Length: 191
Image (cartoon, rainbow, N blue to C red; front, side):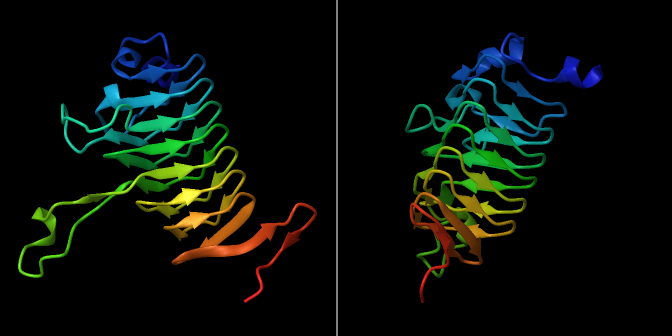
């Protein structure tokens, strides 16, 4: 009972801070860190598991360049302990499921100047898109610029950067296509 009472649903006061908080959606308790809720859009019938960090920016009240910054579609499931940290644009389609401890970000530290500490160099933003119906396995890291097509599978603990076509199985560090659906059957890519 405490879990439901402390969770956030579309009719709760805390939901009003979000850009959109869809009907039937829930953020389970205990929540992770939440920043920039007014730039985060959550679709309908989506479940955000416990201990998930949702962030538009890194600190409360940070000004953003786009609106919304983080979009999570309808009927999604974001697994426990995951973090979605947007600065420019993260677009997660409908019916996307993630395992536990998935990290998705659209920003990397800059490191162009070898004489300046990396933590104080200007970061670089590159939008992320995760297509409808995709599955992101536990422990996967989705890096800036990743564009994952519809109905893809990302294997657990993969590190994803780049563009991947629909109906692909993506695995590894760095991730690559290990199987693809050609319209009639699943095949391994020819090397």
